[in-house]
Image (cartoon, rainbow, N blue to C red; front, side):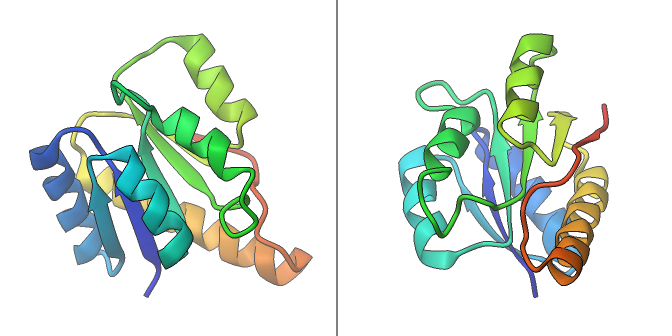
Amino acid sequence: MPKILLLYEDHSEAEVLADSLQRGGLEVMAFGDTDAAARDIIRQQPDLLILDMDLPRFSGLELHECLKFTRRASDLPVIYLTSNHDSIQRLVAVQQGASAILSKDGDGPRLLEVALRVLQRKSESSRSAGHSGPSAPIFRD
């Protein structure tokens, strides 16, 4: 069962999203705190990160940038969730290797659909190229 690490500021919305992902057959570790999430990324080695870009103290973008310096987490696929429609912020996410960027609208089924697609692409990439590096991003709003 693929493991997903979800970092999301709003606890009640995180529960809704985690529930949708779990019903789709994914194991979900949900966090509202970047520090705790960073520790578990290294320990748990999830298959996919779903990061909130809008966290107040330390954003998902900043966490992703830091992870690039760790061998265990440097090539994890990332789906970003954002309420900000700033094209510069989205460009930065793409430059950091975002697999997808979605609006924060609480749409759990849509998040599940994109997560499964990203995991499938990761699996296909691993089989064909012998590694799990990022591929072209999926944009959906």
